Amino acid sequence: MIMRRLRSHAMWRPSPRVRSWLAIGTVLSTLFISALAHRSAGLTLPLPWNDETTFLWPAIHFAQQNTLLSPELNADRPLMWMPPGYMLILGLIFKIIPFSFVFVRWLSWGFMALAYVMLILWMRRYRSFWAALLFLSLFWLNSTFACAGNVARMDGLLLLLVTAGYLLCAHQAFWKGLPLLACSLLVHPNGIYFFGAALVAVLLQSAPWRRPTQSEKGLIVLAILAWVAYGLYVHLNWEGFQNDMAMQFSRKKDWNPLALLLRWPTCGYMTLYAMIGLVASVKFRRYLLPIAFGFSSYFISVTGHEMWYLFFLQLGMLVLGWLTIAAADRLVQKRWRHPSIRYASGALLGVVFLCFFYLDGMVEGPRGYFRELAWGWGMHTESEVKYFTEQDRTSIWKAIQDRLPSGSAGIKVQFIPSADQFLYFDMFGPKIQPFTPHFTVQKPDMWVVHESRYIPPWVAKASEHIQPRSHLLYTRDETERWYWVAPAENIGAPEKAGASNVSAR
Image (cartoon, rainbow, N blue to C red; front, side, top):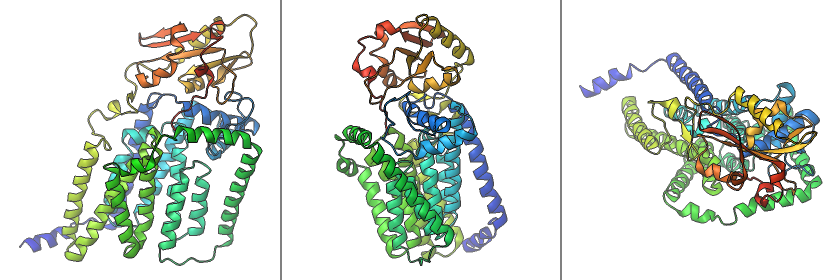
């Protein structure tokens, strides 16, 4: 009788057309909710960030003057601590669509949304697709992914290029996927992990390598030319490149990647990835690509040890959970061929992983979802009090001008938080210029510091050396205050003010 019920239950399985529409509905619903979450995140999840200043000014100057040299950062040379791919792509976009801070953050959301769609299209080729769809959709709605899609950093674009490259490789279009993955390094050095892992996975697969077509040869040539151009760019700015790379390595000289890999539970997850990869290389080689992708994602966060890489770690955890369900599904099918048993075991494992992800904070609860999104040790979405309004913009700009010496011109103003300066983007001119010094002895003539209920204490510490000499510039709603330091008081300011405001990379 039990088997008859199981057989009758198997007949209830939705048709392929219904399943297809259900998957499309899930994807569209996720993107819609994600867009609403992005809108809720606004300017406070994350706050206007230092990295945005570093990456947006070169993009703006490339759009306007075809150069990456940005006097707002360093008037003597371009910054060389990151490859210029992200800035160049943004600059090309700004040539068509005028720059605005709100638009560029929506652009980051667009990169993340397209990466999500690419992953869904890729996961359709594997077992337990519905588990992958559920996990991806829930993860893309959590605070970490909402934050990653609301900041002008290159991580979203990197993820988009990587997922597109892996999708092409999964379709055995190796001559398209691998050049794309090689170019991802020009957006962010973390692309090396994804490229190297994909290359190993492709070489271990039994799929034949056909000769590249003319269009594929063209893509390979374009990738080579992109790397040659970057090499020439580095050669022409070799001294700056050496200086910036020395800074990058000095930041990480005290980190011990081996110790990070050996700590629990990291070593357990890495061992599980290694075991699954070893088994897949012998029996299930078509799973080598998702294993390489998940392993690379997890590895980046563990060895990079940066706050902005947290969503890569969560992505690696997501893939590991899905791979476990897919492997269990295959084992169950060999033992019990009835589909109902497979579905029940997959559902049980899915619930176990969802509970684990929820307890670990990787899946958000539905209650107060938009209101309670939070990340970065204190950053959260706006409440009834706005972080910045049009009235603030007008009043603060007038107050700054009123405090400048008469007849002054070219006054360099440093804003804290740094990317607050883009909220006044169309107001700058010969009289007032934004300035966030990087690797230069030049110092700003004036600081404008935004003190807000939304700025956590660890972020506010960056302006502690200025605040004792600051004067109230403008205030609103009791907690939103703007301070300034006059040019005369800036003389002899601590060296920290003129140093590079390096953020997490």
